[in-house]
Image (tube, rainbow over all chains, first blue to last red; front, side, top):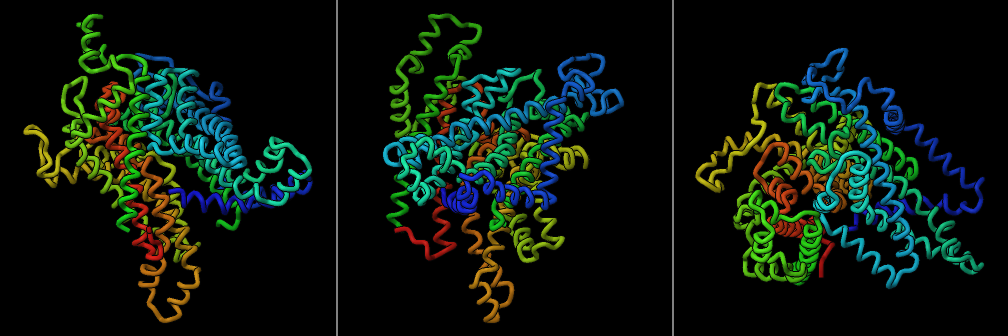
Amino acid sequence: MANGGESFRGALGEAALPVGIAVSSSERSEAPLRQAIRRLRKSTTAVIGVVIVAVLLLVALFADALAPQSPIANDQTQTFARPSWEHPLGSDQLGRDMLSRVIHGTRISLLVGVSSVLLALFVGVPFGLIAGYYGGRVDSVVMRAMDLILAFPIYLLAIILMVIFTPTAGLIGTMKVTGAIAIVRIPIYARLVRGSVLSIKEKEYIEASRALGVRDPAILARHVLPNCLAPIIVTTTLGIATSIIVEATLSFLGLGTQPPTPSWGWDLKANVSFIQANPWLSLFPGLAIFVTVLGFNLFGDGLRDALDPRLK
Amino acid sequence: MRTYILKRVIQIVPTVLMITFVVFVMMRSVPGDPVVSVLGDAYTEEDAIKAREAYGLDQPIVVQYVIWLGKLVQGDWGASILTGRPVLQDVLIRLPVTLELVVLSMVVALVIAVPAAIIGALRQNTWADYTATTAAMIGVSIPEFFIGVLLLLGFSIGLGGLLPSSGWVYLPGTCPSIVCSASLWGNTLHVLMPAFALGVGRAAILTRLLRASMLEVIRSEYVTTARAKGLSERPVVFKHALKNALIPTVTVMGLQVGFLIGGAIVVETLFAMPGLGTFGIDAIIARDYQQVQGFALITALAFVVINLLVDLTYTFLDPRIRYA
């Protein structure tokens, strides 16, 4: 089952080596990074991805200024308005401006997508480092716990977690979704990092550090971790895309952030019932999800090619 | 080989036990009490205690699980707390719907992906390749329910109701009651959009993986040898290249099963299909413990069986792989 991931990780892990060898000297470690950025800039699709992500971040940051109206203000006189100057994307069954909802929905989507992946990273990476570095009983306890999560079909686990957390609106509701998605993603990082650490810890420079009396935490932080970075970065970028889809899916099933907080998945589902008369209402939240996921996927693909040209 | 399969089948047992046990514990930690919704307006504390006793909900969780397991071994999947219907009966009625959806979506995925990947790999960096890779990139970025909405807009609304937007017509012979309709033609019309909605994403992932491994295989020495000895292109591509390229692809497709289950839930919800996905999500939201256990059991079984099949596919694709 892990074969595909193993070979993927192995190739990336090796590619990260030049970064690691030069790790003690900040001058020399910049070179591979610059190389990667140069390669990234040469790829048209990656640049498109970066631009999409940058624009979305700006939209999320300045949503209040950009949205023409409040995303949650009902207007009973304006229900199901067709697209017009006042409502460029129309309005929904409560008369809420769809453009404003789509703009504000960017916040939930990006917030959940990015923070769930980062949360999973901050928990999963230390687990993987410790399991891989110390091996033995520590390794089997940590990895059995990770296998327990991995043994679940991801959506079954995420859905039940959301039912336990009971979905709510607002920031708290968003944090619940973030937590549920982070939990199902933790083992991905633990496995990824553990695999890299297993090969890195046998290298001479680690042995040299140990011989010099460097303590384990320092070795892990300064010598082992930097060598696992390339696959971590790629997994994180592509993971954001996946997390945004999972968030939209949970929302679509009514288990994401609850209304009135604008969420693309929920808006799409709510308006499917009215698709016959108001086809555009489901279209725009769906397009927003698609463009966002596409942006992170293009960016992530570009990063992978840039960090490991041999994989191309 | 036979001992290997036997060993793997035995290994299925602890995994299924673990998944069902964790789901069991998790569902019982969901805030709220299903007895409240069973009794509804007639709720009194006295009745609630009686009802909890009747369903065995007053026992410790582990005892409850062992009781559930004991009945399961005898073929009793329990009965829904809310409707009183036997869970196994509902699962068996809904299983064919989901199976049809999933199998057809995989057919859709293969029919799109295999030609796209081969053309992409053989004509690397031509417009045909760019079209295939761009389409695949778009495909992996669209969630199933949005593809479903686009299909609805195109074929249910746009083309004047060419395809039905929701509901289900059973395959002849699978109709669970006298009120439902069954016909091959009606079934085909109903399953087309859901199967595409679920299949397109899988097709995109498959295209990307298969194209990449085809590119690697095509440059290998044995393909050059096959060409050098005068084989025509067709056997070179299909027998030598494709078969070997499929190995890593099958592995990753096996890992996709977890997503496929989520996809089935979403697509069944969107098209209001009476399958296992809608059964599961409704049960989880209603906290119908027994139905959720039935859903978890069938999902866990599907999950481990598909992963076993993936491993067994290797021996077919590469006879050097032997399981002792």
